[in-house]
Amino acid sequence: MTSFITACPYCQSKNKVPESRVSDKASCGRCQSSLFDGKPINTTTENLSALLTSELPIVIDFWAPWCNPCVGFAPIFEDAAAEMTGQVRFLKVDTESQQTIAAKYQIRSIPTIMVFKSGKMIDSINGALPKSQFIQWLNQAVIK
Image (cartoon, rainbow, N blue to C red; front, side, top):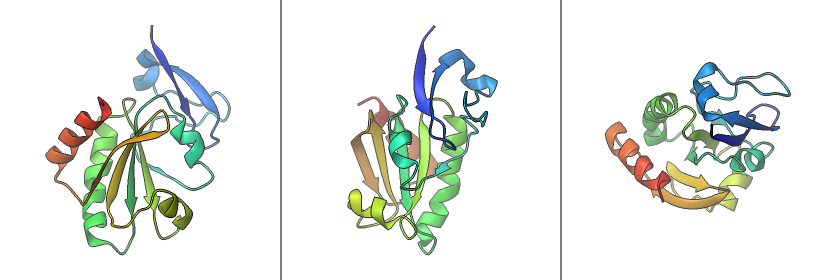
């Protein structure tokens, strides 16, 4: 049986999760919150480092509430998060309220989507994509 380590989106404690238990509503051993609810995690400077330590690939949507393409892309990102629960961790960073994170990753245009593995950025793309193209790009990025 294979397992992976991921951080709780609420308390940031690390949890070892057997792959077979992801669909069983895996919960945090510390705070009992759901580890995978099929929704993107709103990310802040307080929880980003812990979430990036996950052994699962991480995809981050850097966006802003005033950005029409960002708002239009949000349902696509949410659908992908629901479809890929337990395979990829989906995070959202509001570049207006989390300017430190945006500066750290040198976000110059939004939406910007980045994929991380073991805490290292392995791919990125700028601009909103249709769902099929986004899923295709994401699947290619996570196998790098």
